[in-house]
Length: 320
Image 1 (spheres, rainbow, N blue to C red):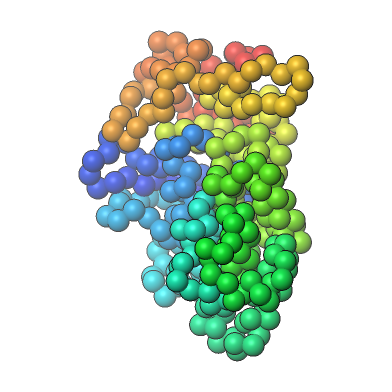
Image 2: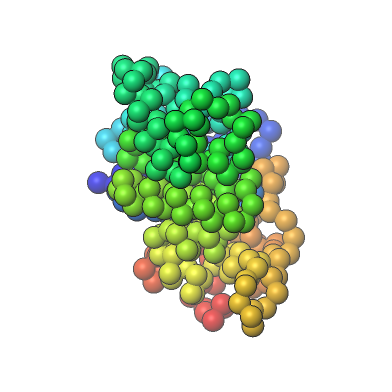
C-alpha cells in the first residue's frame, strides 16, 4: 500500500472560476520515496499538497480520494485531521516567517505540539534541542530562547523543518521550501531535507517550479499544468527525454552553469488562469507543436515508456 495515494482528485470553486483548480489528478508516494510535483505558479501544485492535510478552499466542491495509509482524508472530521497532522503528516511551507508566531520564542513553537500530546516539558525541550542539532542550528539550547526575528531566513526555515519532524511523521509535504531563500541557502536546506528524509525513512512530496531541482532530488516527478497532470515518470527519464512539450519547455527555460549550454528559452505566452477554460489541450496556445485537433480534443494521461503523458502527439516523436 502506498504511503500517500491521491486518486482522481478534483476541486472546483463554488463560483468565480471557469475550470477546476484540480482536474482528476492522481499520484502516489511510497515510504522512503521523494516525489516531485512541478509546474508554473497557478498550476494547482500547492492546492494538491495542502489537500493532503485536509486544507481545501472554503465551499469548494471536492471529488475523488486522498488516502494517507488507511485514512481517507476528505472524509475525516476535525479531531481525526488534528491527529493526522500531529502524528502522520507534516508540512514545510514556502515562507518560514509566515509559519511562526513572531511574538513567541522558538522553544515554545517547537514544543507546543509535543506538550499538547502529553510529553513533559523537559522531554519536549530535549527533543526540540535534538532536532535543532539535526538541522544544523548552532547553539540549539540558546536558539530555543530566541524569537523568530533573531534568525535569518535560512536559519528560520531550518527551525520550521525541525518543527515538522517533532511528531516523527511518515509523510513530509514540502511546498516550495526554498523559494524565499538565496541560492547558497537553498542548497543547504535541500541537503538537510534530503538527508533527514533518508535517515528517517520518511516519504516526501516535494513541490517546486524548478524541474531541474526536482530531477536532482526526486525519485519520480509529476508535471502539472492548468490543474492537470500532463506527464509523469522517473526523474532520470524526465530530465533526459521529456515526452510532453510543456515539460520540455520547463527544462529549456532553466538556466544552466555548463560552459557550452544554450541560454534559457522562456515558454511563450502565459499560463491559463482559473477564469479561462479553453477547449482541447490547455497548453495548445503556447505549444509550438499544436495542431488543429489539439485545440479541440482534450488529451488524457496514457501510459508511455515507463511513465505517462497527456499529449495527442506524444507517439510522433515531436521532441526527438
